[in-house]
Image (cartoon, rainbow, N blue to C red):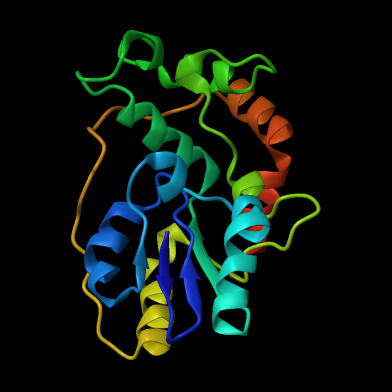
Length: 195
């Protein structure tokens, strides 16, 4: 999470959407930088609205605008799958011995195994009963997000490539993809609504 005090802007770091690259590039411009631990770095919209927004609003006297990225849902899961294939991953979270199909099937279960507990982007960005993120951009159109930030922060931005997941084949069988689209319909609908 990055807080740009003077500009009244907060960047919420959706996991697996280049948040480390964004933080690396923009940390020097931010008044508050939360990069560790992951539970704080990846503060979602609900926790932000419940805990952080009131504090910032009281201190500044005005509310802040929020922004975040969202990745295409299958690609987002593919990034998690590849990330959890790293040699240093703990055995209960490792995906090294399974296919992407098996990982997504586990993700779709009501009682997910540890390696498949990665959350949901729609829940992160637009939680029920709380104000959603104000400006959500598609990860796949990073140039639009960068232009938004450049305008708001009045500076040019070059994002480095940091914390890139290892390469691995990502393909889903039609049946597993159809099931995923049913289970995570809110994620696909939110992504499709972004222009």
